[in-house]
Every structure is written in structure tokens, then in C-alpha cells.
Image (cartoon, rainbow, N blue to C red):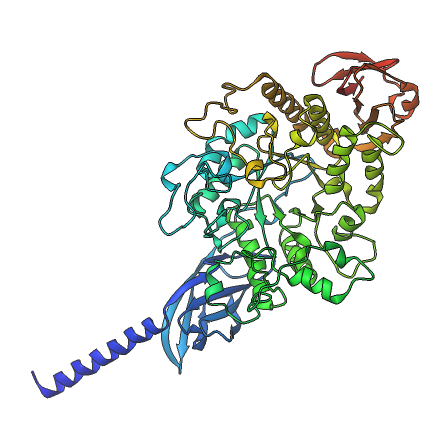
Length: 619
């Protein structure tokens, strides 16, 4: 071999070695989001690149209609945040992103732009025509035993432990969508399904360790999309539980954060004081407000700092990505007021500009309608912040209803509690868009709250399914699931009977259900399927009559075509109802059919059966 040939070969080998080392040095480990779409209302998107020292690199874009607007490195050189403007003229395809250093090409990335689904922007979010079924994926049904334990995940299957993982998964939900449809539910809220690689009690999902990945013990991203598709075939909207306030302490970025201000109190964690009212208190100290907003929710949940614009953008684009990717019909936002208020306004407004008919319900666990009303979009109450939030969880009504049902009737007790709370609806810009519920995953089961009294239970369910707003029923409520330990989350979130192969009782089929449980299930199913096609309940007006502390309470739902009279009687004896007092709503009607029993009742001298509720379609 000639000297010249040897020199050429040696040169080529050196070039190859340099290229190999360069690729190794700048290895990209994550690209989030992994792809995006053309035709979005907001043409800009943030793409986060993570890998060894990639912050040193300069990106260049070569794709028609796509422009690189900025590239931002952080104090941690393992991150590079690039912002792409995807014009209306851009077509679906693979965008070439070249990463350079010293004018040399170091690495090329092909970033996919997908076509949006037809009418994606005009999707309808959950609304007052819907009833939401809330369930814990880990506690509903085990459809795939192969994913019960996954290598590398410390929290293993243990059904004997109330706070352990029990093996429920997305396949189990898919397998029982027919049951959910037949019951009459039209929306499905799953507690968070994103990865929770935490060592203990990871089943609850609220300590997310990867915002772009479904927890493998539940399934995967593809199966989550399939769940949405299968639900949609049955007219069921999928609602994702999102958390903007905190992540899990084992989130992958906690070991290598982009910057020192990515989370609050990074060096010495400080827990929140949970005093939500400080945001509304005219006398509150800044110190109290800062600890509330910036403190960690619990030791295992670092508080994310949305004042950091890179993080704020990351969270906003993540939410939009899931809406588009999984065809979501809504968001339930956890611990809504704990996040930065300015960020929350950006987040909600951005989503609703992208999807004008979408819906987001925020969790603000306050018993004051004034506090809730300040968060609802369009509020005229004096506030120190703006909000695009369309809906809130109606905790004031939930607590008042339990008091109304369980207290002895008096001037200030019993039904007057729920009557007066409802009278505060003038505070809300849109009370019809509040989510009402007998219980949720964080409180004692409703059956326990009404002292395991089936009659009171039925009254409460009837109230929720005929009242203004959007009802939410928790899994197992339909079969009187309860908890013997007060406020014990592990027991409150027990397994749905029939979701596991060897369960002795099966609520899906009715096998071995006790008579009271079967009766409750039939009662709720009847009400739900009646409500499903009842536009008067969905959109009709509401008129209530002041209770006279005699153990009865009456209200009407009505529109130009139909009138529905709802009569509660807590007494141990039948009660004569003076229907002359209701002349505004009963004029022209002589009878009503009870939608539960099918029995006809004369309006004049109406006799309400003991400890019951009548839902009368007036004729």
C-alpha cells in the first residue's frame, strides 16, 4: 500500500473517530414533546432536548413553513429549549433539525409534524349533559396481569396493603367500558395515569415522574389512546387528571434539574401551609401567601416553579399534547389554587384558545362559594388575579347536602343548609358548569357520610342527578362501597368488586351482590339512563322552595317543554305536600309520573312516601 493511500485511510479513520466521539459526547436522551401537529391555533411550540452538554449546540431548521424563533440553554448545559413557529402553510412531515458547534454539524434530528384530526379544535368538552364516572385505574379492574410488577419499579403488587399497588390497569377499564356505558355514564375521569416511579403508595398517581409517559404498570401511551378511542365509540368522553403544581420527588429531572429555580425550596424543602384562603384574605401576609403557593404539597411532591417561563411553557405544551394525542374531552386540574395564579391564567387561556368548547374543572377545596366564584371565568368579584378556568368542583354543595340529609330539621339545620348554599349561586358566572358530587377519592365514601342509610343515600344521589351542574359519581358508589376507617385513603380507594379474577362478588355481573347493593345499583342506573336524554335536566332552569323545617324540600327543573318536580321527604311517615304553594310551576299540571317507580301521583294533595325522593315528570 502506498504512503498516500495509508495517509488517506488514516485521515478518514480520524474523521470517523471524531464524528463518533462527537455523537457520544452530545447524546440526546429525551425530546419532549416527541412530535407536534400542523394547523394549531398557537403556531409556536417549545421542544425540550435533554442530553450530555447539548446546551452547547446551536440548532438550525430546514423545513418549509417552520421557523426557529429562539434557542435557550440553561445553567445546566444538559438542556436545550428550542421554540418552533409552525406556520399555517406548514405541511405534515419530518422537520430536519441540525445541531451545530463551531459551524460543524454534530447531530441531526428528524422531528415529526403530524396532521391534526378533523374538527379537533372544535371538540366538545364535558358539560351539563354529561355524568362523570371517577375511578382509580389501579383499583378498578386488572385486565393484564403481566404488567402487575415491572422490573425497575420499586412499588410492587400487594393487594393486602391498602396503600400498595393492586394491579388494576387501562386494559381492565377497556374491558368494562360496556358496563360504564350501560350504567349511563357519559364521561370518564381517571385519577392520574402518568408514570409514578415512587417507592411507596405510587398507586394514587399524584407524584408524576414523567409527564409524557403512562405508567407501565397501567399500560402504555398507545393503550391510553386506545382507551380514549374505545370510550368515544360508546359516547364517553375521557377526562385527564393533570397536576401543574407539583411532580414526584423521583421525577427524572430532579436528579439533574435544568436550573436552580426549577422547583421551589430546592435545597431545604418547605411544605405548604395549605391555607388557600390567603389568596383572598385582604389582611394576609406575603409570607403566608408565599409558603402556600411555593411550599411542597408533601415531602414526596416538590413544588414546581411556574415563574420559570421555560417550565411554564413545558407544562402548557404538555397539556395541549395530551389533549391532541389522546383526544381528551376535558381536564380535571388537581390542587388548582396552589400553582402560580398568573401561570394558571396563561395555562387555561392557552388551552381554551386552542379548543374553545373544551372544559377544565379545577379542584379548589373551599366551602365558600365566594372563594370558588373568584376562580371561575368571567367573575365580577374583586380579585387580584385573572382566570380563564371554566369549571370548579362544588365542595360547598357537597358538604351542605350531607348536612341536609343527616341533621335533624330545624330553623338553621337540615334542608335549609343546601337551600341557602344554592341561593349563593348568584356569585358564580356560570353555576351550570360546576361539577357536583356526593363524594370523591379524597373523602369518606358517601354511603358512610350518610350513616350507611340507604334511604338517605338515594335522596343524595337523586339530588346530584337532578340538580344544576355536571354530576360526578365515584366508582363503587353504585354498589354502596363504604369505609370503616374514617378518612383512610387506602380503604376509600378499595378494589371494585369483580375487577379481579378470583373476586367472590362481581358488581359488573351482579354475582353475589347483596340486595341493598343491587338495589342501589339499579336505582343509579335508572336515574342515569333517564338523565342521559333529558335536556330539561341538562339545560333547564331551576326553582327551589324554602324548606319549612318539616323534613321536606321541593325544587323544579323546567323549560318551555317540560317540568320536573323533585320532592324529598326525610320523615319516617308519609308527608302531605301543599302543592298550592308551588302554583308558579304546577299551574296547568294535574299529575306526575315518578321516573324511578313509574307510579302516577296526583299533584293536588300530593302524598310523599316516607324517607324517599320523588322525581315527577309533570303532565
